[in-house]
Image (cartoon, rainbow, N blue to C red; front, top):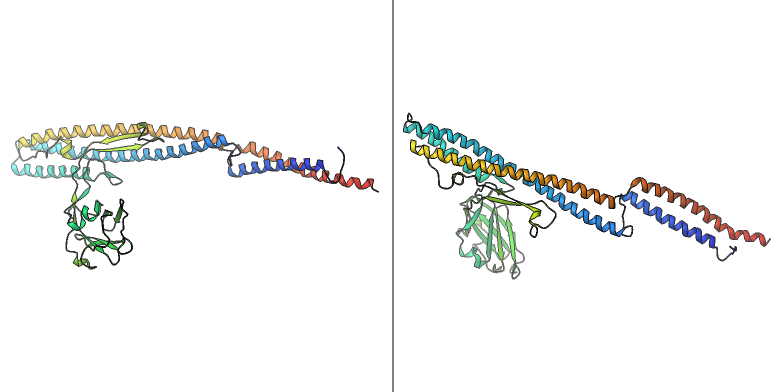
Length: 399
């Protein structure tokens, strides 16, 4: 190759190889510092796409694993409640058997009947209060509805929904509503408990809800959520001034709910859509635990006479059988959830392994590659320096 001054081809070749080695070294450094084999799409677009899909799948499976764990906790609470009910029924059976004996007087049977009634009430209390995250598990009635609405707080006035916090509101609490047009403040007062809360709905005179829409107002301090629609007119005042003492008209009243159906829960234990594929969810139904449901209906007998005690004994037997059946169902569901949890754990493990193969960098191999590129860079720098010295050799020909 001829030696020229204007064009140093050897230096250009050395520089090109040096740049290539430098880029490869930078790529290895990026992989080592990030821990990813594919830090950018240009490294391996196909692996990045597949690996990202696996990452999303793993995130969904981990969420499903949490759901399954919550299902297991819920079932444990239900089983514990049924266990207590079973113990109570055992005592009730003993009382009913004792009350059938002829040596007892009416007074003594009265004592037995008093305890029997209290135990029956305790079963109902356990059924009503056993819950998970605020949801009744044994068919208990812990919901509240609205009743006794007046004209200023009914659907025509824009009040279209009520939701009560059963832990803060009693079944007979009454509420008053006030709306101050000058400030745009809506106030709700629990007149039974003396609590109140105000929410500002916006500038005075402006409609607080767009046409065709609804707006939920959370009066958490009072224990009620109210939903209003566009029929609520911000230009019309409700109540008599800002003094809560003037709010003498009851706008609505809370009433105890009457639902006592068996509780059904659907737990998402797959990464797919349970609406289109039922295999992604597990449905669990927990039987009712109140005494009436356990005996098949009715209020049940008492122990005031030997005959009534015999009937009560049969009812307790039926209740015990119902509890045993309910606990068997809960136990079967617990086993199913446990197997689902184990399957999710295996799926997550295998998916993570597959994602790791695609996206995680092999540190030892990449360090070896990085070291090799560093040697090439050092050699390239040396060769470029040598190539840049070649034109200076021509000066000797001029001497």
